[in-house]
Image (spheres, helix red, strand yellow):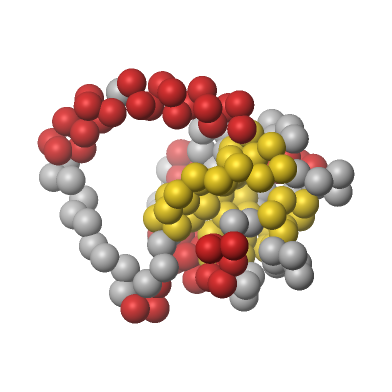
Length: 155
């Protein structure tokens, strides 16, 4: 997989790591630097590794095109499609740049009082702060090995 810069329509990419608290009404503030790209709406869904994915509507549509192109006859394709779509919901930023996390997604990601919001190119990942710290510690120990494997793939 070769690196391809995003075109002008998608010039912003999500990068960085931020910690924000959840309020009593399950609202989570999105970092200010990401709000402009998300202000026209976004989709929140279950992610991989027990986190949540937050994508712009445009990137969600591209993702859905890929999923809908997968073979219906394959159980794995059907399962993944159900996993991603059944938990998805459209979200809008409120006047303070917050999104509302429904209980079922909060529970799926085991979100407590603080969330780590991680920019991962075309999506934001929302992790429980403690789970993110553990995951990050493990992945940092494997960085050299992962880089070698990615090099084998041409990255």
